Length: 212
Image (cartoon, rainbow, N blue to C red):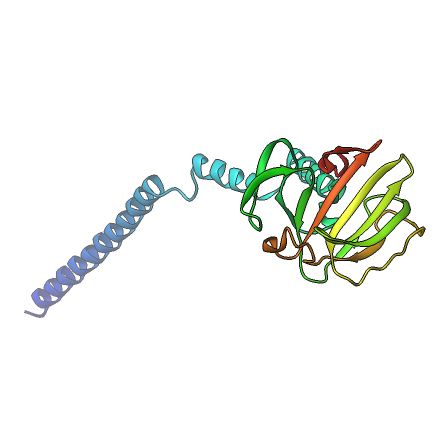
């Protein structure tokens, strides 16, 4: 009787051990299969993604061409002397085709350029030279007339009454000659601005040709 019970116990023990071995083996092979499946379907980083990342980095880093273009723009802005007078041109030079005057409400020849400025913004001389005259013009208000060394005459008008130079002064390029104002009776609707005329051998020329 005892012998039969012992044999029965050994049988169940052996069966339990076999079941455990099978279970462990199944778990091992199942995990291995899952790892292979994940590695095939979900790569860490494909070649396309690598290329995209590299492209994004290239976009973020300025190229030599971009740097050269930025430098050229900076030099262009530096050489443009509009900022000696104000912010931007609000009325262009016209010798043949009339331009519209907001103040007079007429179309007329405008042999000058008008530059919008801030109140009390410095007006700087576009050239070295001599101050020919300082006066209050009946139409264009406070005016400073400067003659350069190459005999080009610049006429700055609509200035504030606080003029910083006087007749016969020798001045340098970039020197403050006064401040932007709105003293022109015929351009008062334009607000604070500088009215600039230029002459070569007593003939009016477009000031824009001398500002770049």
